[in-house]
Image 1: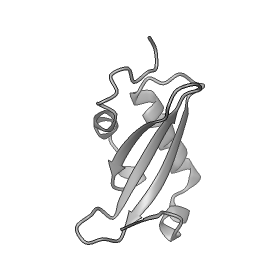
Image 2: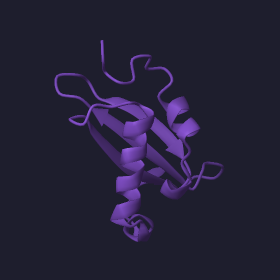
Image 3: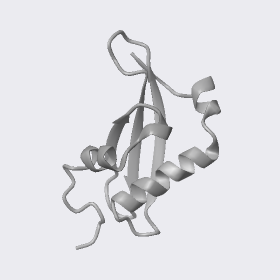
Length: 96
């Protein structure tokens, strides 16, 4: 079972950490400045699942959202994990 991370865990993540992760996603995916990156932390309470999952939305005007999922805390996300989460989207930058 999942629940939105509106708990103390999310409140404990400084805004700066969230902003840094958004910038990291934009850099790794070579996104244009007008592309929005949204990050939601979901806590899992079921046995055997990771403590948290980060759902990353890449929102481009006139295009459907692109969704990537990352496991673990915001402070431990690697460039490789981001690239792997979005690997099924060959045109990551949105450029043609």
